[in-house]
Length: 162
Image (cartoon, rainbow, N blue to C red):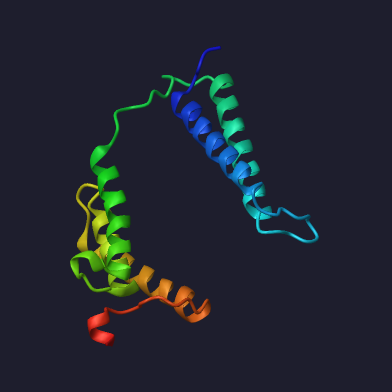
């Protein structure tokens, strides 16, 4: 069988593998029924849905002809580094790093760090647009997680709030 789109084929395999892993992992929990859902019900359905999407995408890659075969290019190491680094920095700034006595900076500062580090993944990022995005995300996250859901985690730096 000939792969007609490498991008779709490997993306489909990735979705298929992750979906099967989620569905399999969900079976270790009580799944329940549609009327009385257990803790494994949603992950099981999500895993099955993800695996189906992966299977359809893989099938499409084998059947639908593309112009150049949509070959997979080189790894984009710089954006990958910045995106992963932004998430790690967010976690560190959110709760601090006691091993090196770095205090918790909280949700708001963590989101600004996350957005600004992640924005370095694209070339020629604009400071004003990044600042606006960070502000919207910080306000939205505060409203959703702190006010609406009442989650308990540091919002502001610990050295300010005491």
